[in-house]
Image (tube, rainbow, N blue to C red):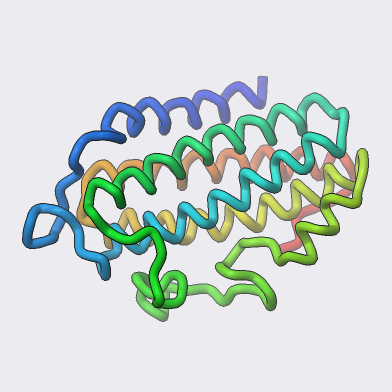
Length: 205
């Protein structure tokens, strides 16, 4: 039952945003679309990268544990974030903007808004290459705990970025998607805290 509320929240985000993936989302650009340096474009590029790691992490843990609850959570996170990533990249196509930038990640956010990324991490909340490799070597309860800890950190970084878009982006549908990410990922953080406690562990931060 506790998992059902999270699933409903995630489904709501997808339903709200999915219908307009192929519609032209208007923003603050001179031709009705956001510019390459806008918060809208920056968020779309950076969150697409952030989401891709969550998808990879989730598929790793599904092969490292037989626990039904963890596998279900990992599958839903992977599906949700893969779908949202497709929306974000689709909008960049519609806006005729590049999917990569020479600027460092998250430069669309004010410097005062940016938490520091961990050493070896591309963006706040993202796991390092070493952490991803370690996850792939663990099994059972150890894999479950490390995944839940990594994903909690990942969601915290994602929420910070999504809040930035909710405040700074100009495209209405993107702002709504960002706020939906905040709500859904906070629900999952709360769920994962309980799952960690059941396994005698706690979040890393």
